[in-house]
Image (cartoon, rainbow, N blue to C red; front, side, top):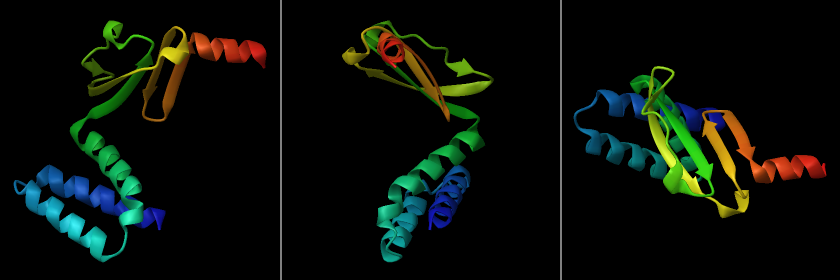
Length: 119
């Protein structure tokens, strides 16, 4: 079932990318998802859509988590790709920064260092 959800997301991203009638594509996709009883697979469909969209448009999603989001700076382009930046604030990190992009995470927070010392 996961493969079917991924396939729907990929096809939807491709159709949206090449269509001038995006609203009609979305309506048709929603109708298909609801009528085929795949609403429980929406998170997987959306994840696949996002991955395919980024691939088609040479984009990358980057999430930065920091104690103070006001002091976070990141380039608009990285590795030749347009960056879709999301910044989250988490005071429990104590300090430092955590960067996530695709399947990679760099955790350079004080909280992670304290946890490593305790282990």
